[in-house]
Image: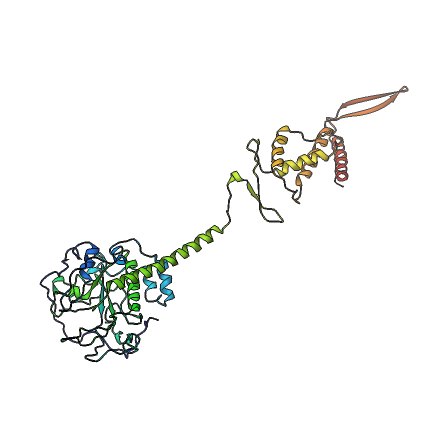
Amino acid sequence: MAIIGSVNAALAECRPGHFRPPFFIKTMGQCGFNSEALSFRGTPAQQAMCLMRGMDATRNLGPLLEGLPPGLAKRVGETTGLPTRETLSAYLSKLDLEWDFAAYLWQPLSRAQDNDPDAPMAKYFVIHDTSGPYYGHRAFPDDINVNPKVNNLRSFACSDEWGKAHVVVNRMGDSLLNHDFSIPWRETKFEQAAEFGGALKGLFVHIEMIQPRRAGAGRGDGHSPDPAFTPAQYDRLALLYTVVSVRAGRWLVPAFHAALDADIRNGHDDPLNFKVDSFADSIDRLMENLQGAQQYQASNATTATDAQPDASPPTSDGFWIDALWGTPRKIAAAPATAAVDSAPNLAADAAADSAAVKPPDAAGAEPDSNPARDSSAAPAAAAVQLPPLPIPRPDIKVAERESEAAHEQKSADAKACTTHRARGHRHQSCEPDSAGDSTRHHVSDAHVRHAQGSSRRHRS
């Protein structure tokens, strides 16, 4: 569990209490720094091979690396192969690092020129060691990798926000966050050189790794534990390297403090006995874990998507009917040769059924025999084999009302006839009923009542 959080007032203030004279450099370093481009010479991989070399037995900078391990060679300076922020955030949360690193994955890194928005973003991931605690000529304790005093991160916490480097990592793999990676911070003499006028502030991010020292063969503290750094430290360093690279959108160039200050008097030698291969292996293992988690998340997302039913199936495969009592079913589409839509026409069918069972009334109304409707309904009925739905049939009443209207019209047009008996003979005279409005109304009402009675009997 990382030791991050509030620092109480009892912690020491880390800001230097004395004046520091400016540093002056005679060269741009053995890796050829370009002050205009704010970058070292060569490709990112070539820069890493120059910057990731430590001190030799004579305490001079070692030779250039002949190559980088595959875990670094395929990544340094590239924008590909980075995990997604979501995957990395979930991984960090499992390590209880959400408030230290996961919450800021969507924020950029610091920029040169003390966070000038027009300056380039941080390019270099500088690795340090604490070179302490110092044991002198005493042997290292057997429990040095888990010793609470050696691995106490609170000793590196500061109450005045002048903590050492951005992050400090102890030998158990725990970490202390002193400054977010968006905060410009200088930790080498090269960055603070007067020649740059502060332009390099924000171009580097810094990671300190706890490494006790003891006196070597000669003077100084040139003896480190074995191993110099634990597997847990390499793993946490790989995680931090991935975090800053994701925030930058490209894999940063790793660098050693020793290589940066090599040509400066009283330069440092850290990280002492750092194994580049172990660092690269930790990156590979981390990426395998993250890729597995990412594939798992993608698989779950695909499964959830596949489980969703189709909202609107293709029309060529039929259509959906929502039954009143039952689950939706998919039925076959009507033939393309139908003269009208393939969906059943309930109103037309109802009218046809009503006409088929209704006997001729007094007006001589006949059942509907429209051939066009019959030809369109037949194929639809053949294609759709469904039980009749228990829904009202309002069209029957409509047909009755239409029949009643026909009776009224026929009765209104009938002639008025009277029979007379004269001289032993009966005479019948008929004439159009054009003047008797009251008679016409009476006749019409009689027919209406007759038709209504017929309708009621038919319904019963």
